[in-house]
Length: 335
Image 1 (tube, one colour):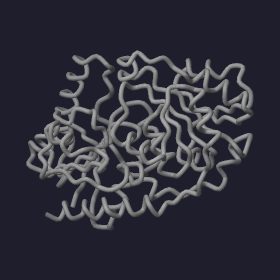
Image 2 (image 1 turned 90 degrees about the vertical axis):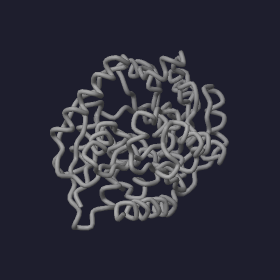
Image 3 (image 1 turned 180 degrees about the vertical axis):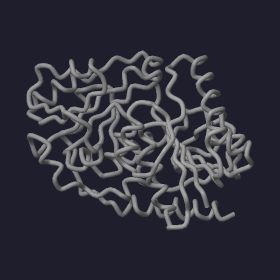
């Protein structure tokens, strides 16, 4: 079988390559395509030796430009990607629409109950989502109930199942005990819509005053400004493995949903200060389970951290989640 993976955003790299690994039985062939957006291409080059085609780029937050970019990429994808039997993506319209037009099977993975699944829901063959998301939410967004498979655990579990901690990671840092801080994506449309202001500068000051060593992972130039005058802080000179950063830390403070879930799934104290208007259903589930703490108040975050305890990572949970998903995926592909 020739399987086409369309990887369009940075967080998808680890996830879809893990799915690919689960299907790599020595007989399947793989086609990879991507999009020039954020650090997607750089990370993809680091994580696989497989060749991939770059189709399209990000078109910013303007809805008209996004629509034009979406249509343009779909047209280019139609002509460039040929000879596949099934497409697998994280809800890529280009992959799903192309598959539909060419009468090929398409499989989508998602975990965002606030996203607009209606752009592909009518055309996808099968869709995989965590059980945290109510089925009624997905069907209201245009995906037929019969197409949906809901699995135990979270999307992050699937690639954490492949994670092997790097014993040399701590050699990259000036300290052994630390907390991670990742700012909010203040330029994201969902943050602009909420009108939220960053709490990162105040959080850094509080953690520093409490004597914590801080591994700081800024996004933009403005994020670097927040660290000025902060003691016991380290900013890596280049990209680092985020899972290693989580695994060896005492806690993770982050405005990024994926990073917060990664920490929670690794059993590391996870403190989210996500700046969107609403948390995703998967995040609410982790909060209710006590595996993630959410607040936009730096004092609350710090006091909750002081009460927390780090537990040993249990990768068996992640391995069981991946086993379930890959088994169901193989069943779907065999039909």
